[in-house]
Image (tube, rainbow, N blue to C red; front, side):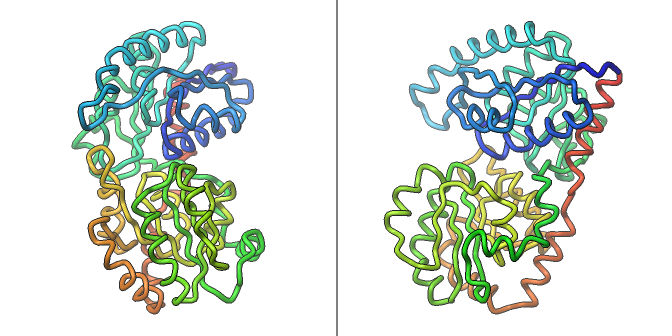
Length: 364
């Protein structure tokens, strides 16, 4: 196979789509140093910032999702879709990719549709236990579909599915050797337990409201908190926080150290977060967002809690959080069993497995 290959990658909207795409690109770059990469994202989404920071070029499409209620944005959707299909066609004609890889997000739809029409082989990376409409549609023409959960043959052709897991940051594989460094990095008291709160890359209103309401409770439990609240909420919560043992961050650039420093984790249940937390192996309370397509976060969290690897707490049950957390805090046996069970579900070689599948397609 030629070493000078052109690889087109589309995915974004949230960190859960962007970081797997970057992880795949990084692994491909190691194997093919002369390869050329081009990302395609949505113009006003975070990939337009994060992808260049990782060292890759990106083109933006004028595209967004369909809202659940009737809005002006929905009326614009057909126009945006046609515009994005046309722009994706131009990008593909100019870049001439040898393969197109989709990791989810608004832009991956038009990009992979046009790639398929132009005879470019495609690979999908489906992160969730319940796929969205776009990937269901794209799967009909995809050469391979890399998945993270069992049971996806309900939605995709069985002969295309490969269970690989979701790509994760490789620095998470060594977090257990970084505990001392992590405590110092966050200036934590090594004698106190630490709770890490993750609301997703954009922030989660209900999770943030819960933490804000429970700050005195955390103080009573003598735990310290690393609270990643998201860029939309940082001003509100940083201004109102005067507690010594509560740190408020818009974003955590050293996730490896955040995980290493924590004893307990409260998190949304996006696919990438779930995959990372399986590798991290700490006691987790999942609070899935009910406001995502097909309620896939609840399904992701349930797939772990059904195997006794995490606690699932729905937004409608948040009033019980103090009892749930205090019980976990005092039960060391429960902490250990949760850690062991979630760690057994980890697939740390996911990125390598996905790139192996990409290589097979390229070799054909």
